[in-house]
Length: 93
Image 1: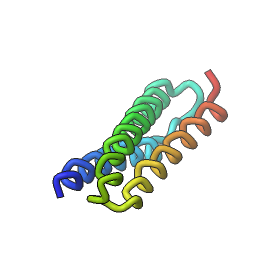
Image 2: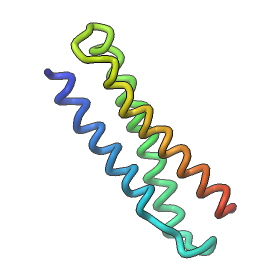
Image 3: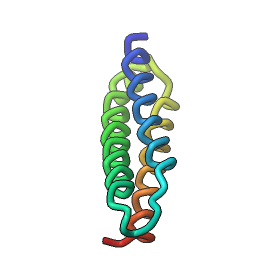
C-alpha cells in the first residue's frame, strides 16, 4: 500500500509533464519559448519516468505490486522520447 501511495503521485506528475509536452505547439522554428518549454517538460517527464520505474523494482520483486506497474513509466518515457525526437527533427537548432 505504501508503495502505491508513492508511485501514484509520481505517475501523475509524469503524466502532467507528458500532457505539457504534447499540448505545447511551437509556432515555428523561431519560437524559442515553446521549444524550450517542450524540452524542459520532456526532460522532466523522462527523469520522472526513470525514477518511477526504479522505485517500482523493489515492490515488484517483493510481489507487493504487480509487474504491470512498470507499464506506465515505460509508456510515458517512450512518449516523451518520441515527442522530443519529433521536435528535434522538425525544428532543428
